[in-house]
Image (cartoon, rainbow, N blue to C red):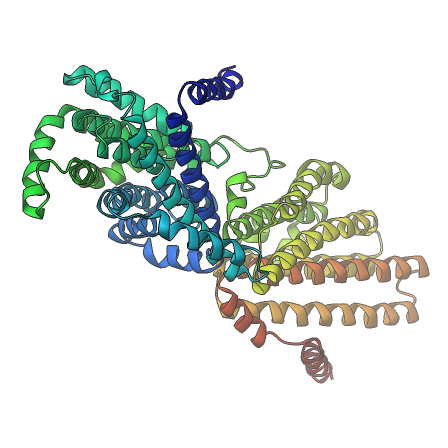
Length: 608
C-alpha cells in the first residue's frame, strides 16, 4: 500500500513546488541531473568489471585491511557507495567472497563516501564546473554510441561526470536565487530536537533519491549559500549516512541469505555510527574545529568543516566497529538463517547475480553442480547403487557385487521432481544474461549450458538402460548377468572418477584423470562388443540377449561420454587462462584411441 501512494505523493509535492517557485524547479532539476549522472557513471564502471573485478576481489579480500582498502578506493573512484554495495552483494551471493570480506568492503565504502564531500566542498563550489561539464557530456555521448565496449564505458563515465558537474551547478544556482525570496534558516531548529529532526530529514531525502552522495551535495550547496545552519547540516549528513542502508536492503531483497546478512551488517554499522554521532555531536563539533585549524580551514568555512565532520564520524564508526566484524558475522549467521531448500529449487540463481557477468557465470556453474548432484543420485539408483557408497573408498567390484537388487526406481518421476524444473530455471537464467561478455565468458557460458544438457541426456539414457538391466541382473543366465554387471561397473567407475576429480578442484591433474576416464570408457565399450561376438558364436546368450546387450552398451557409452564431457566443463572453475592451459594438456580423440589400442594390445599379450 505504501509503495502505491509513495510515488504519486512525491510527484504531487514536486509539482506543487514547481508551481509556487521557479527556483525550487532549478534545484530539483539539478538533483535530477546529478542522479542521472550517477546512473551513467555506474553504467560506465560496469563496462570494466568483466573478469578484472573478480580477480581484484579475490586478491584484495583475503585480509581485512585489504577489504577495507578495496571498499574505500573503489567508492572514492566510482563516487557511488550504492554501486559498491550492489557489487559486493552480487559477488557475496555468488560465493566469490566471504561475509567477513563483504562487511570489510562496506565499512571501507562508507569511509570512501567522504571523498565526495571534500571534492564538492573544496572544488565544486569554488570553480565554475559547468564549463567542464559541457565538453564532458559532448565527448561522452559521442563515445556512448560506439560499438567498442571499452569506448562505450569511457563514454558513460565522461557523460556521467559531466552530468554530475552540471547538476551541482544547477543546485548551487537554484539555492543562490532561492535565498533572495525565502530564507530557509527560519526553519532551523536548535538543540538535540533539531539534531533528531534534521537527521530524519536527511534519511528521508536519501531514501527518496536513493543516493547519499546526492543528498550530501544538496546539503553542501544549501549550506554554501547559508540556506541551512551548520548544526542542522551536520544532522542532515548523519541522516544521509543512515539512508544509504535502504539501498543495500533493497539490493539484498533479490539476493540469497549471504546478501541479506551483508545488508544487516550495513544497517548495524550505520545505525551504531549515527547513534554515536548524534550522542557526541557537540564533542565532535569541537574536534572538527581543532582538525580544521590544523588543516588551515577558516572558522567560517562551514562547507569544508562539514566535510571534516563527515570524515570524522565515518572514521570513528570504522575504528569502533572493525574489531567486532567476526562476532557480527556469527550473530548474523545465527539470526539470519538459510531456509531449507527443496532439491528441485534453484539455490544460486538470484537477480543480484545478474548484475555482473562474473557473478552470473558463477551462479550458473553452482546451480549446474546442484543439477548434477540431483542427477548423480538418479543415475546411481538406476544402476542399483547407493550414492554414498559410490563416493566411498569401497572397491568398485565389491560395490557391484553387494549392490541392492530390489525394486526398480521410477526414473520419470524422479526426473520430473528433481531435474526438469531446475534445468528449466537454469536455461531461463542463462537467457537473462544479456550484458556484454568477452569471448572467454561467452565460451564458458556455452560450455555450462552444454554441461546441463549432457546431464539431462545422461538421465534419459539411464532410463532406457534400466529396462533391460532390471531383467538381466536377475537372469538365470550367468553370462548375461556378468555382462550387465560389467556395464554397471563401467558407469560406477565413471561416477566415482568424476567425484574424485571434483574433490581435486582447480588442479590440472584432474584433466589427466578425465582423459584416463575417457580411455577406460572407450576400452570398456570395445571389450563389450568383442565379448558379445564371442558369446553369440559359442551360444552362451540368445540373439535377443545379444541385441539388448549391444543397445544397452551403446546407452552406457553415451552416458559415460556425456558425464565426462560435463566434468570437463563443470569441474574446472579457475581463470580463463588456467582453463585454456588445462585444455591444452587434455588428450585429443585420436590420442585417446591410441591409448585404448595400446591397452587392448597389452590385454591380449597378458591373455596369451
